[in-house]
Image 1 (cartoon, rainbow, N blue to C red):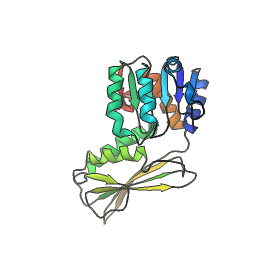
Image 2 (cartoon, rainbow, N blue to C red):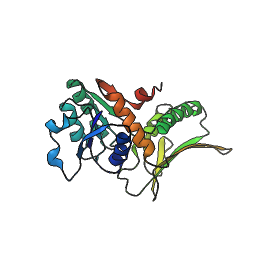
Image 3 (cartoon, rainbow, N blue to C red):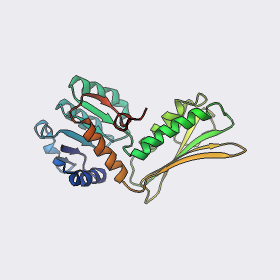
Length: 239
């Protein structure tokens, strides 16, 4: 498999290490230092583009690759107001696109567990749900994309919660997400259900970037040769 990295930071390098060990070829590495090489001709050397850039550049990066007819795996967060537009461009160009807020296999199983627990707790209003996420101080967005996905899983199953907020709130319809930035911290996400009698908590803690990188490469391997819009549920066959 020939891979183009669009965004070549810590995550790109972590994916590259695993990809090379598996015998894949890296044909393009785009960073701020060589944007002049981000051309249709160079992109089309690849079987798949893996995009981990910035919220400000993600949409342009993704759509440029899609318009070149190359499948894209994207893990950049905080640009999702344009997600539907990117998906439309993907379909217009008869290629494939997969976005995930988190590619870790463990986190994607955690997403499912979170939604199941939220549904179980939906009739027990004595439990107040809240969330906490912890990341390293270099993380640019708050709450994390993973936290937003977890919040959406709760909101879809808890009729008494209408929206998530990234601050302390006294509104009972708000799902509170507390964001902490502490070094070193690859990522910890906790969902709490608290009552006067007891508490229930579920937590996922990442120990390194390896889980994210392995999942992103798995998604890229899955996407090659396909057309359409996919998620990690398709890759991992999670109902």
